Amino acid sequence: MDQLKLNLLNNGIDFIQSGVEYFLHDEPDPRSHKYAVLHLFSGLVLLVKERLRREHPSLIFKEVRDTGRPGAKTIDFDEAIARLEACAGVALDDGKKKLLRRAQQIRNNLEHYEFEINLRQAQSIIGKLSEFVYCFMQDELGERLEAHVSPEVWHRMQDLREIAERVEAEEAAEWRARAAKYVRLNKKQLAALADTIEPYHPKHNPDPREFLRCGECGETAVVVTEDGDIGVCTNSECREVHEITHCLRCGEPMAEGGMLCDSCEVYLADQ
Image (cartoon, rainbow, N blue to C red; front, side, top):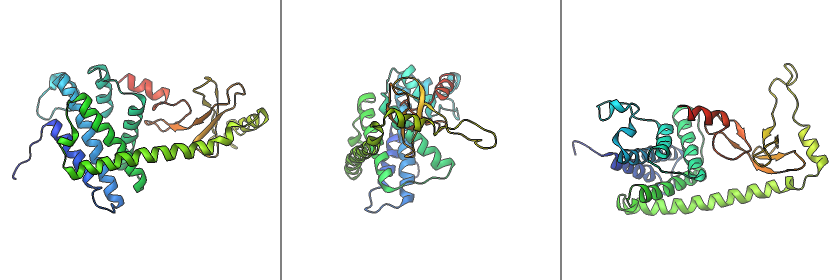
């Protein structure tokens, strides 16, 4: 074959198949994890753009006047997700948005920074992305993924989806077990926890921790515990125990759920 020509849909599917093929051998090495994630995410973005193209061809270009022009600049991931909702009427729930932002963060680290991932983490994220791709193709593109990939790839994607569900359940149970001790804190213990947040001092404490806003009571009273991913609201009327997440754009810790901090939400809304 002297030439390869793929439309937007088939180009996306080709990336997805390529990504999963890196996991077809029994003992994939860390390098294969890297390219599996990169290819699968690239394919997913192309499928989102295909949905936008079906809504209107101009939606995948940064400038409407450049629609169809050779070399014209197309939209990036953030713009694609924003237009998917605003222009194509495709509403993604918080879980799906969180998954896509997490995958974007992993992709960015792979391409632009130092990176570390183990097999279990790779299987989990690829399994979750496989589930998203399967549902998105069926619901938004009217296509069955299994009709476009090899039987071997399809079976492996089924395995990865099951692994992702199992890993997610195991991680949730492990977090709940560690968080249980914080549910039972009394007022004195809450006050002691609040006292661990020391005020800023240019010499003695130039980089202090800060209270986070509680998504339950709205008070800026959450302390991140030594566990790192567990936060406790020190408001004695609330006492909510939070799973600490990080803004998927700037990395700031949050105790309110969601994917982006307030500053990044505003920034992206203005783009």
